Image (cartoon, rainbow over all chains, first blue to last red; front, side):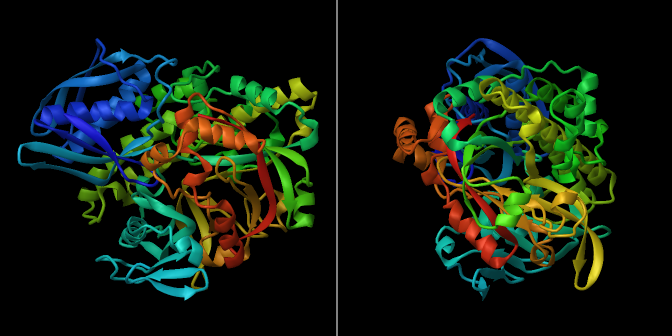
Length: 135
Length: 477
């Protein structure tokens, strides 16, 4: 599991890679949080999540949008997710630590998850996601 | 130069139909030769994609701060026919009514002997940065009123004066707001964030009027060389972001239901006169009102600091004007010699209505609407006026800022926050932010030169220069 920031002039474009789809989604949540808060450490605060969409792009889009919402209102910086991915749903828990202004002010607020430029695919044994975040 | 685009004037270019399949109208954009070097292919594709949307009128347009965004390009403007046209959150953006306002003061730059103390006081007064919470404690009823009434709600609560309202686009209130289309989730995010600045490119800057290009217009706005002004740039916070996310999902379904074919899922849309289209418009208008109230509250906090530091009364600090950057609105425009009501989307573009237009404060009616173009940190901002030429060419629109040229990842590799801060301080510009990372993100080097962007809109004639303002100090999120 890993992610890198790719070149994008105005926004933040991320490439996330993982061995399974579940890990890919979990790593995407961590990458989103690292963009928002700068530093992300493992934590034990668990928040339930469930989203529904007709396709894989929609599922990852909606999961990240929901993580953004939950992080904002629950004041938790998520570092991982334990998820079950179905045909048209993702459910499970997001795990993280409470938002702490002294440690979590190193990033930039993400306003939304974009479908523009979104790609999700598999090369050999690796799942790859490209996603653009509006900051 | 990109293959397939045509020059049609010194600073005007056409993207012909066929550049991408199914374009209904040509694209047009305004750019000087110097700025052509910064043009991204992705932005032109997005401009062309917009031209495929049902009911688009005349042209898909982009201003000289055009760059690669999501859905519409940033700097994008498009008008849609009321019967055949659509409305799309991709033409407004996540930060609904992100906008900017300019407040004047009676202070002269030389009177601010301790800039650092002023910036520090402003930084303490205005909640700033990721996760910042408001000092306001809104009830659900108050939030509802804020969504309905915008700036007027803030003034009713004692944040500012009735004169401020007149000096806002739409008088700080879109009358068609429908709070019932704003979800519980959006409200939950909006409640603790009213009166907060946000992060990213949002800022509050102390500026000095350094040069005046149009003395009669500047005098009418009460501005003279050496005067201190305050510029505030922020939007509708998590509430607006959530409205966009929520309705994007609904409109994705609507796109399929109404059998609309689009080249980009982020352009999800619905006919203007459909339940889904009306719901998004009502929610977007409510979020726009939230943003106007937000800027009004922040301006009130700013005035409070100036009153306590310099003993200036509220009425000595009039609002010059407030403009929206990300919004869709029903407006009447002349199209091919006929007056037509259309729905104009502006995404990273500023309304620039010419002299005599309605919805301009009466005292500016013969000048044209004030247009405020913020520079990046360390570069000048400009005050301009809207023109009749803008009414004819761009549905009364102009640019909204400088536009980025360097990605955040490249900026982080190339620059250090501390060095940027010190370089600006050597020029006398004090920067205060919650982290040095936020400073690198918005360093002067990452933006196009604001002077060149503004020169293009002035030369093309879609707005005309009144004054240049130079930064003295800035607080950032």
